[in-house]
Image 1 (cartoon, rainbow, N blue to C red):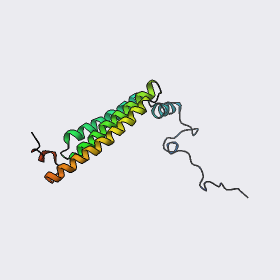
Image 2: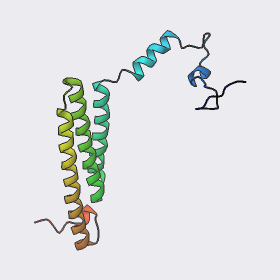
Image 3: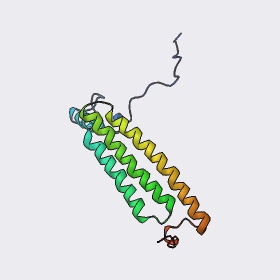
Image 4: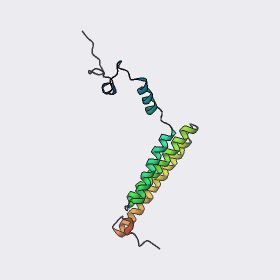
Length: 142
């Protein structure tokens, strides 16, 4: 009598890449192994900086193009999150200390305070003008 596995009744299958790419031995070639190791396991500082740059550009685009006050606040949050990514990446790849994490916590607290004050301003504008459109609030100019 054959003993069944208690964890899974299905047989274990190799990854999908072995079905797509025909190999003679069932193992990936040395070239494919070098590509996989280089792309998947070697994540460095420039990758984090690229992600941070992308988040910053999206936040800047959001701040510059939105007419809605809440959209502008979301753009500012994205810009602050890109700064957090930079803090943590430079902390990890430079000294390995917790300095970047500490600064990131302070930025998160600053972002929370900014969100509370910003939303209070938006609610005040909505009570006075019945709109949160930035261009409709031109009577606040001096």
